[in-house]
Image 1 (cartoon, one colour):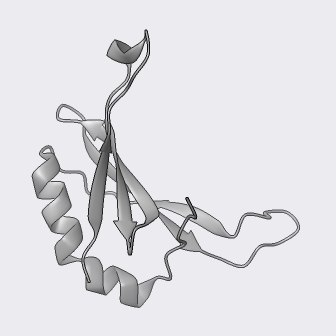
Image 2 (cartoon, rainbow, N blue to C red):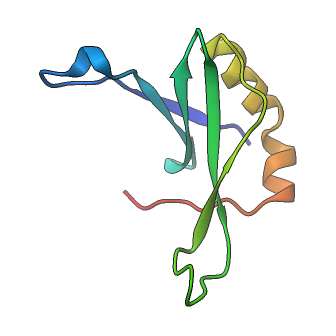
Length: 97
C-alpha cells in the first residue's frame, strides 16, 4: 500500500504569509499532513486512532515525526518506503471528507 499526496496552495489576500501544505491520504481518505518549508524542513503529522475518554473525546491523536527532510520529494519517498511498517504498527485515523 502507498500513501498519496494532495498539495494545497494558500489563497486570499494574505497568501504570501502562508506556505503550501500536503494532505497524506490512504484510499482517498486523509490520514495526516506535511507542512513546513525547505529552510526548516518538512514535518510530518499523522492521526493515530485512540479510544475516546471523557477528558479527551477526540477519537485520534496527532503524532509528529522527529525526522524532517529539506526536500519534499525525499519526504514523500521516505513516507512511502515506511508505509507498510507504519500501517502495521499504528491504526491510522481516516478523516471523512
